[in-house]
Length: 69
Length: 179
Image 1 (cartoon, rainbow over the protein chains, first blue to last red):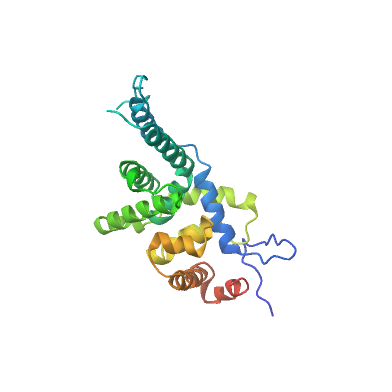
Image 2: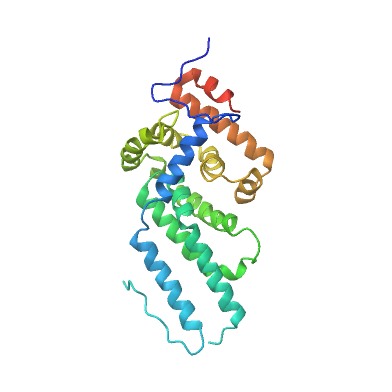
């Protein structure tokens, strides 16, 4: 007799594809983090990189980081 | 300092690729160490290390794999210094508990997230790279620096271990259907 899905388990099978509950959960975890708003610290690093690129361009004044700390 | 137009273009491209990769870097780091703040610190450190070493990156090769290698090295380096990283982050559990029902996942996402942190890092990273990030065996093998057969073996062991943690000894039945 087939084992019943766990209490939280309800499958969302698509025709012709085997549903993989672990992969679905792992992908959900990935999406949850990836969809978060980017923290300020990351933006500050990008600003520093942008400033270095701008400073290396001839004839263009170096941009100041937007989040100096 | 004079910089050639080619170098400037390469730097700009590197920067753009880095920006696009930040969500994935944060996700991989979070899955590896389980602590949001520590994971973001690791991801930021990897970004800065990657930028500093950008001249060693060969354009046209796999940028994602290259950056993930840097992050992974950072994780294992930090892990050796601080064993707390294997702990579970309760903030993550609370958030995914809210999100999971709406997604109609077949097993509880929070259970999987929590179970992940109980696995050996070598199994956890393979599950994260292939299961969460959707990488191929080949790309995961490149990042970890091992054979594809080793990746497959670790993936299978990791899945079974997750099943045991989530569903108990009968959990293998759930995973055998899709193995």
